[in-house]
Amino acid sequence: MTNLELKNRDLKVLWHPCTQMKDHEEVPLIPIKKAHGVYLEDFDGNLYIDAISSWWVNLFGHTNKYINGKLKEQLESLEHVILAGFTHEQVVKLSERLVKLTPAGLEKCFYADNGSSAVEVALKMSYHAHLNDGKEEKTIFVSLTNSYHGETLGALSVGDVELYKETYKPLLLETIQTPVPFDMSLEAAKEAALQFEALCKEKANKISAIILEPLIQGAGSMHMYHTEYLVLVRQICDTYDVHLIADEVMVGFGRSGELFACSKANISPDFMILSKGLTGGYLPLSVVLTTNDIYAKFYCPYHDYKAFLHSHSYTGNALACACANATLDIFETDNIIEKNKILATYMGDVLQKFLELENVESVRQTGMVCAVQLKDYPPKFRAGLKVYTYGLSKGVLLRPLGNVVYFMPPYVITHEEIKIMMYTAYDAIAQLID
Ligand SMILES: Cc1ncc(COP(=O)(O)O)c(C=O)c1O
Image 1 (cartoon, helix red, strand yellow):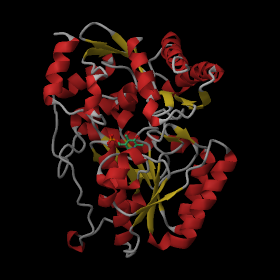
Image 2 (cartoon, rainbow, N blue to C red):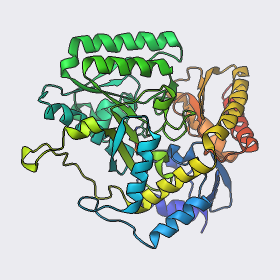
Image 3 (tube, rainbow, N blue to C red):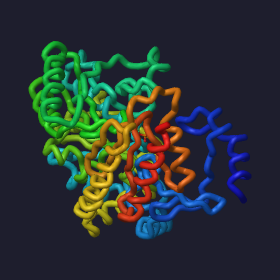
């Protein structure tokens, strides 16, 4: 089998995610035969450094020996069982560990199978918790400008990236966007918090929750902000009886520099959403953690009709939970968060080099995520696509978001591989200058 053969077969029968399929008349579709560590290998034997952790999911490299072993072990005993009325050891163990590791106060785990569906769970649970308290008018969700929470209709409703949202607007829930802090400064955090507080003063009786991506807005071009914003939003939510939903689908599991971004700000949300890195990038799984206080609002005789009757067929899949437990084992035994600090410092040093380029506006970093903001190329110029194509030709998978080139590699990357990844991007950006 060659790349070409598989590509031709693929294009006859597949419709790829987040893709204008016509682009594949010019942009190569790359069939991957195998992967190991940070490397993807195609059918012609070319290697690519996975600088974006395969859509931000992979933590400890592809075909990680330890996770592979734990997954194979689990396959021998239980692959899946309905989670309503039944349970299994992996999901119990995982929930106990998540409750211990996440900020204090998060005591109950509700599972789904991807980030967007977990966002739906959190939104429904927040609304329903208020409803069970007799506050039926709390029907509005607030989110931040430039936010992204997934592609299902509820998740799109709280998102604010036009590219994904605009077409579907007539189908969406009514939501309100409050300004995200303009940049990473303390002043910007305070200013944005004042705007959220003003909104609460006016409308809190109608607001169920604010949902936000703590510290880094991923699909919003890796926009970053100060921890103080989370501290202030937590206080405002307490004052105005508004839930705080922390969507850590992307920032969770070490991307922010700490295991969870909320821990970095020393706050505890009412709902925390985890997915992506939860299984180390192996299998789809997501979870919404919440407090005993919220849980108690649903706990009553069946005929009071207050139960949370939400389900997904693959909720708490045993294979996915086994991968998640293996992932947490690695965090525990290999001192990952401390080791990542060394990697992050190194990436931060190389990042400064990009400022030498005349078409680079600025650079930013939070923990294991680095971003290079290019000067304002018009969308038609397709700067991101040019960087992507150049990267592939040199063996690096970069996937810029508009005019932002970013790096979010698996944590097993070496200093040498960081150099190759970032200098390839540097050259790709330099090529854009005519
Ligand atoms: C912050 C955030 N929330 C939710 C999602 C949606 O997750 P999924 O793609 O698994 O539905 C994403 C996906 O990128 C995300 O970055």
